[in-house]
Amino acid sequence: RTYGIYNGLTRLINGKIAWAIDNPMTFLLQGFAVHLWFITSLILALTILYGLIWLNKPNKIFYIAIPLYVFGLMAGTYAMTPVGITIEFNTRNGPFLSTLCIGMGWWLAQHDFKPTVQLALTVILTSFLLQVTEYLLLSNIYSLPIEFSQATPNQGKYLIGTAFFGAGVMLLALAVPQLGKKTPLPHWGKFTLGIYVAHLFVLNYAEKLTTNLPNIMQQLVTAILVYVITLAMVAILAK
Image 1 (cartoon, helix red, strand yellow):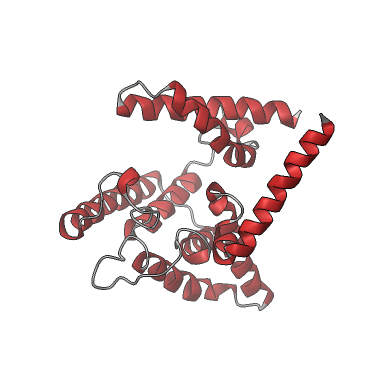
Image 2 (cartoon, rainbow, N blue to C red):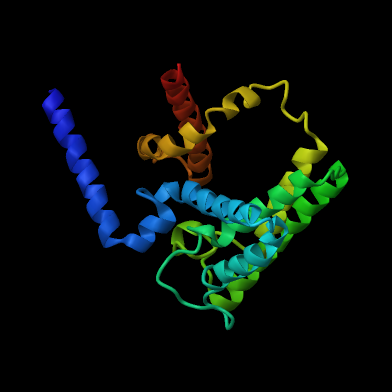
């Protein structure tokens, strides 16, 4: 039995290595699994920021982050527009869209900025409406699919308003630092990385359990099931 497990792991690892050799760009920007793109993007964005800190030029982060974000949009959601470009990889992966978010977070951490809840909510609501407007315009003029399930990996994941929405959430966290303190969420927060890495395995089974539910109900119940089950798994393994 031990030999069988070892043999299976060996085949899995060898298969992943062979895939990485055959798909070097995807591996560099995404990692070994499709859902790990977030971690890879985070690492690459932090590498850029720390490189600038090492050069004693951290304030130049936005000179890099903004062009990367614009490129990510042009080769992503806006690829079908006159300003768009076509490339062979997904700009959701890598540092193209993540560096701006990291830069904004770093800037806010370096400055004693105390936003009001009203300001934070205004930014969140305005940027949300901006994203909805963008998506509707792109859908009506350039036939961008309304449903994410019908879109290509590069379509619809990030918009101009997405960066501002992220900034609004950061402002809200600064405006209400005690938000959720008396709930279980801060305790569960330490399991976030484990949940993120493992949730895809649970998702495959959860979708089978909810397949007969109406679409909206299926999405809601599946999300709750995946989070609760994965949280329980990670919490047990963490003991």
